[in-house]
Image (tube, rainbow, N blue to C red; front, side, top):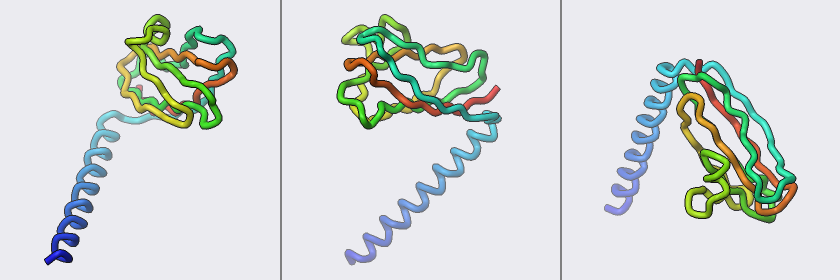
Length: 128
């Protein structure tokens, strides 16, 4: 009986993975993905926001921002320099941690560092 339950769970997991893959491919074809960009950004200004490069006038943009694994402090993410600075309105990344964001056209993204000389790497998928 237990083996049948395990087999059922495995089959369910496989079916869900296939559905997710199909939905992802449909989304990709609808969005008309035209490229990727990657980069790194290091800030030497302690607690001063740094703007991440955003491609203007896009239909679709997905960005993953990852704190350098070698960071010893935190990275603070916000949609403006003031929210990246504000304690209550920012997202905190620990060393090596990442966040995936789907951005609307002309959206801005800023980050702050708690230790000078630390930063983030990013990858962006976009469609025009």
